Length: 292
Image 1 (cartoon, helix red, strand yellow):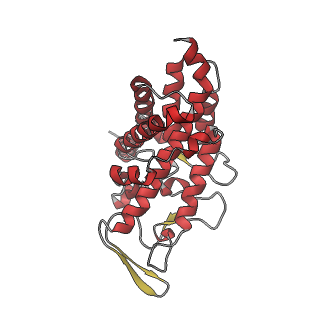
Image 2: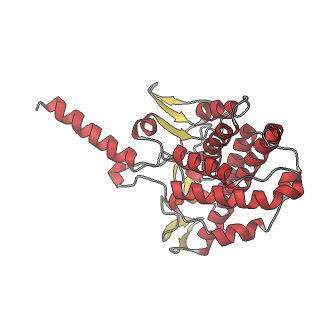
Image 3: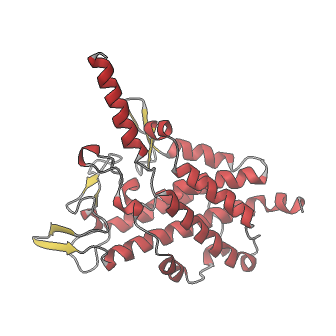
């Protein structure tokens, strides 16, 4: 075997390892948990808000396709990186091959939701749409930061695998149904406000420390450009020591500050998912009623 063939094989193997280990955002299990939490809360609120609750089958259409979107195959993940772009949401590509932004795929899916289709297809598409919306509650995807660094044996952002505290999220929701009484928000708007909420959260101070969460995810000074990990590095959930405001700042492993930040992001993911469910359910209610 020639040197060029060996190099090509090594490149393919390296890329295969890299991208097989890299999810688009949250792990599939977390997407599923967030979706079921949203459906549970949505159905608690539905009757009082004058909207049809979701059936168990409809919920499973949404959850299944949400997870499927998050666990796309090797070649899809290789050429679509699916980061959010807050700079007027322009599509950005690298070397005219790699689509680094999520917006074109998201807009296509959001447009599909507005077409006349069978309800089952609507719920399947909604699952893929909310997968993107949930992804924008993950800081690394809105800063954004290219986190797959095989030379450091780092293939994912640690926040993406941080477990959902289901009890804490449900406590944060506290049966709040107000959003279902407000005018519905279309998926494109939901994507923007969810991403903006995450961006604002990263700029917020870490409670009790003279630093913001940019210690972990640092924005670029150039609008629309990729950011980088801050002084604390890709260590969310682990012990992290870093300099902040001329002193040493420390977060311990499983620090309550980590749990509070993650719970706020996961709660936002649930609320935004409920918003998407509410938008679609009200839109296709006449079709659903006509079939009964």
